Image (cartoon, rainbow, N blue to C red; front, side, top):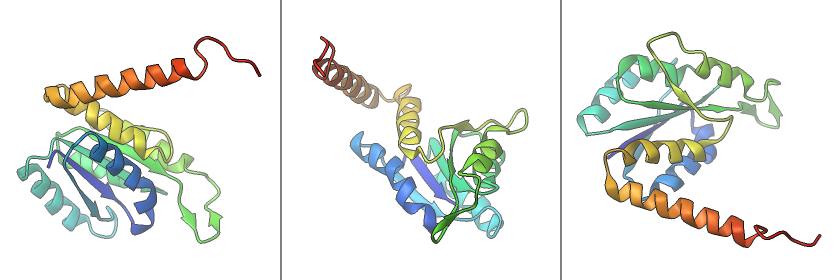
Length: 166
C-alpha cells in the first residue's frame, strides 16, 4: 500500500471515492479507513502507526466541519498529508458554511505541521497530488502522469485549439 485514505465519516464516502478512483487509474495501491479524529482518537493513532508499518508513503484525509482529521494525522506522522475539506451536509441541508469552515481549518495549520490542501470537495485533486508525490520515487507512476498530461493536452487541442465557430 502506497496511500492511505482517511475519512472522518461514512457520509464522506461518495466524495472521497474520487481520490480512490484516481489512484486506481494510476495503478497505485491504497487502503481506506473511516475514523473520526474526535470520536476515536486512540484508534486513529493506532491506525496511523499501522499504515506507516505497512509502507504507506502518502496520506489523504477528508473531513468536514472542524476538519481536525488531516491536522491530527499530520501531527502524528512525518508522511505527507493531503487534506480534502468537505462540505458537511445534513440530510437535505448544509451547515451554512459550504465547506469554508473545513477549508480554513485544514489550510491554517500551525507552523511545522503542514497539510497540503486541495479545494473544497476536490478529492480527485488529492489523488492526483498523491500520484505526483509518489512519482518522485516511482518512474512508472511518473510515466503514467506524463502520458495522462499529454492526453489532456491533446484533448484540449482537439476541442478548440484552432478556434471554433459558435
